[in-house]
Length: 138
Image 1 (cartoon, helix red, strand yellow):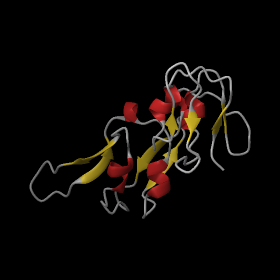
Image 2 (image 1 turned 60 degrees about the horizontal axis):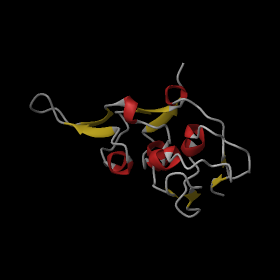
Image 3 (image 1 turned 180 degrees about the vertical axis):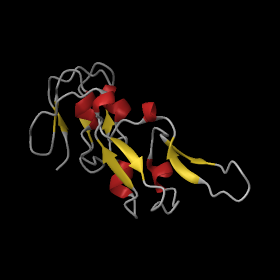
Image 4 (image 1 turned 90 degrees about the vertical axis):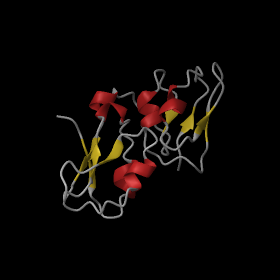
C-alpha cells in the first residue's frame, strides 16, 4: 500500500522534489498528493517532510531522517552486469558510467556523487543481478 499525505501538509514541496518516481504532485502552499499507483514505498518523502505529515502503507507517520543518516547504495563491481538500469532509474543522477582510464579497461558503473543520492533504494530493489546493496551509515 502506498504512502499518503495528511491534512497538515504545508505544501512546501520538499516531498515532491525528492520523490524518485515523481509520484507526488501539488502546488506551493497547498496539500500535496501521492499517486498511489506510482508510489514505490521508499519512505524518502516522509524522511524529508519537515512537518511529519506523510504516512506509510501501514498508516504510521514516517519520521524525518537527515540525508546523511539514510542508507546509501554500495555497488559490487564483481557481480555488476553493466546493464545500466541503475543509471537509467536514478532521477538524481547519482550513478554514471565511468569511461576506461587506460586502453583495455572495462567501464564500470559507480556512485559518483553521494550527495545526489536521496536513499530511496530503487537502484538496489531493481538491480537484476543484486549487485547493489543499501548500507546504513556508521
